[in-house]
Image (cartoon, rainbow, N blue to C red; front, side):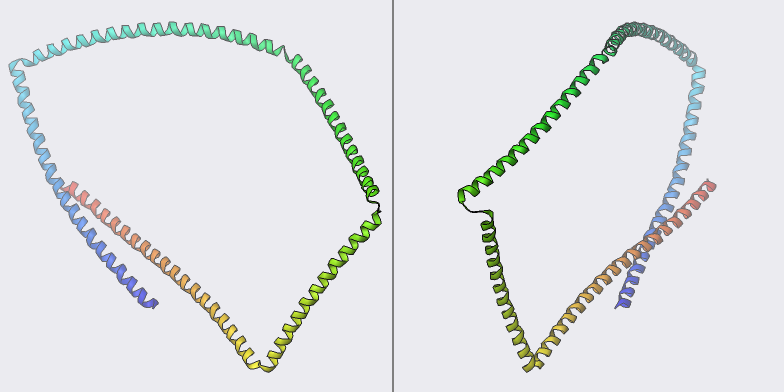
Length: 296
């Protein structure tokens, strides 16, 4: 089965490669046709340029003969004078704007200096105040200590009062009911013993039921040994069958994973071959371009 799969995979792989080779050959033919088109286009472009040069030479001759060249020079000189005037006017305006900006910035600087003086005075004033803050913090620390001590004392008093109240309640209960602590203990122990005896009876009953079941099983094993053995064999065979089924499923799953990995590897190899072919075509295209330049 695996050999058949391998043969089918090879056929597909070879078919894909052949189709790719045909496609790349078609692309190479189109590239060669494009190169010839570029050569023809360059020849046409050179012809157009030569025609333009001839036309411009004719225009230059006509300008020189007609005296239009001198008029153009005068017109250009006038334009140059107007441009110079505009630049001078613009420079003067810019200088005025820059001077106004400088004045405005100087005013802002003066206000900033005044603010710095005010801030420095405030800083000095705050530096003079730390003694008062230290005294205040010391007072707060003493107050916290006093509060903590008072809270500890109050907790101790509450605990002592609670203990005293518990003892008093216990004594009052004993006085009201009229029986001592020993009687209470005896009654509690009797109740505990009764519950334990009931548990013992319950366990004895369970033991009897288990013994009966064991006896029945022994009787069945003595008189019907063949059937018991047959059933045990059946159970074991079914368990083995189930384990084998699980193993076969695992094997199938692993085979599927292996097939997917093989497919991925095949795709990667096909991509590598395709890229190598493209590289070869690119190299051939580079040689074609070099030959085209040499022909030009």
